[in-house]
Image (cartoon, rainbow, N blue to C red; front, side, top):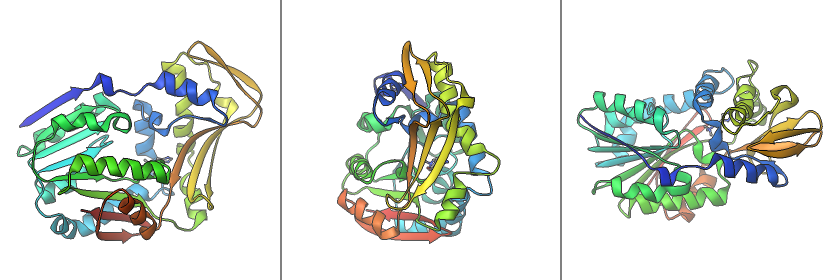
Length: 313
Ligand code: AVJ
């Protein structure tokens, strides 16, 4: 068994600075990476269990159905890198099929990552597991010293790439390219464009779990930034914007109100929005164009139930 956890403090996120800047901007926004505190991670898992939100289930089914084919297309790989690995569940299928000698998982939430990756290392004794507590959106390159040589595969499942604007997505994929190297590969999963009514339902589940996930952001600021948001005075509001090709999530102020955040006073007008997330949906060819612009060559695509996994070399 080989396992190490390294917390990279210099590569950490900065909740306070990012939130104060986002709430001072017009329109107001908060980066979606801040959804994922402990409560937020649990709420996201609960979203994945909602009947309206098929994304996680569909990706898992796709990976199961095509695993042998995907592994064959990938070939021999020495090192798998997963940015935003979270609970380290998704990568298990790949480890079973590809058998790399090293796995490097990165996540903004260091402690939960360390626990998940440590457990995984116990089960996969042939794999050297490195868990890096870091904000890879800021500091991906800081992972380089922890990578062994050999052929590398970046695994970026779950449609996390949908949280970035197409330009930001291309820039991130180009950084993945650098990290993986010229002989490297990218296996990426994303949500496809589909019936907008279906998309709308997925982000407005009847049980209100997505609403709780969105509002937890304010609860987190209350806990961590000594804020005094009244969660009853903000409304979860999510819709599909077909022109932009994305789900937008907002928190709408139900009244004129002033809130304390990290020692500052922030005013919200009645009806004012805090934009908390974009979740882009792509057609397969649309996404390929972004990946190609980032220096990747398409190898193979698998699609199922409105979700796609693509392999690049
Ligand atoms: C984890 C970014 C893929 O955009 O669908 C789920 C997060 N937000 N419901 C997504 C999310 C609201 C999710 N991703």
